[in-house]
Length: 251
Length: 251
Image (cartoon, rainbow over all chains, first blue to last red; front, side):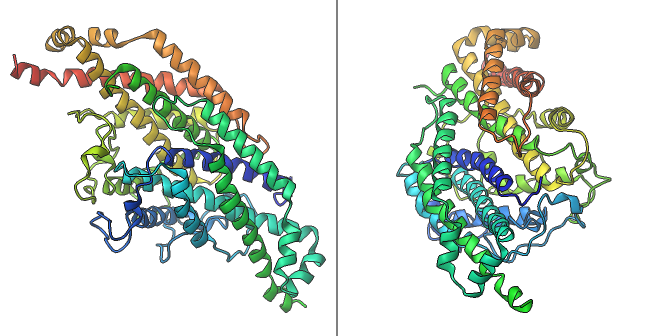
């Protein structure tokens, strides 16, 4: 099966949902703990200039980078100046998808909206579990970012390859509005929302509520409607517009 | 509710199952990749004396240690000589459970049995996704280890507090066999096995199998019957026997 077939990409995106749902649910077990996101309130001795959360994000990405995570085109780092991969030349078969030139990076926007959404995800207040909270934030952000960038790159490339002439004209005309509307499938978005709500309900039906908080499906809908779906679409538009220089060279 | 109530502890252990199931399922998406566990085959430039897996485990635990993970009595490191916590004095309320003196550490045994079980969990062969494989191994091991040590410490302490005279005599007599049999509840073990199988089936019913492997319930049963349940019980016995010196002082 062609890896750039839209249905195959959609199936991959569908499977990323599970990790996103689990990590958000894990984070929701802890209170908002807003001090963990403030450089002023940071109690981490190693670096006090940024928040505990930013320290965790950088240190986790430093490891991930050494192990080659960012060699995968769908993995984009949140932090700058990371160490290079310490792995020797990776085997070409380690990449399941065609190598694609994709200089888009929407991590800044993802992080900004995610951090604002913690007040929707978690109960107000402080339970002093800052270490666990920021650890889970980083895993949730990585799962969301992977889903967004994978979707943006491969959905856009797949649609482009299906109708190259159509998209070439829009790209050369810089018509981001028409690109956006041509990429938007409201019925597919509704399908995703319905499915993630069903998944959350199924997952939560397994939980022993004596020791664990449940979250409402509205919260998952919020993350999909305000972060995941719109930023994926912005990423698709951005990915396509970056083809312009190349198209002009081959004109 | 008393945190050392056996039913409360069991509910916590039940909720740890979800992460264990998910992480094993994630790891099973990749082949065995045995080179990732061999120091000889290691392609990680930073340290070539141990395997890629051991490099990942150490680097991850170094971060976790800096963020205070091992200040929690139920979190035990797999690696030695970790950096101390970089957090300033943690708030006492950050610990949900009573502070307990517990010098047991069964990580060596957990790791050994886990690594042997990869040949049951994953398909034979090599897909060159070594970085992802060892990343998921570390998360799975941390989830298993937390479940084992949490269970060992708090179940044992809870049972001890319920029948202190009975256990005191067994501890002073070093009667590990009788302690083990008094801690064993076959009906409870069967209940756990039935529940994790049901959870795995429910979780897998949500998966789009076009792009994702399913695993058989036998695999989860293997991990519970050969790693999680027996090492938790050994940990309980070990935890109780370590009370001996203290009991002798107060005799």
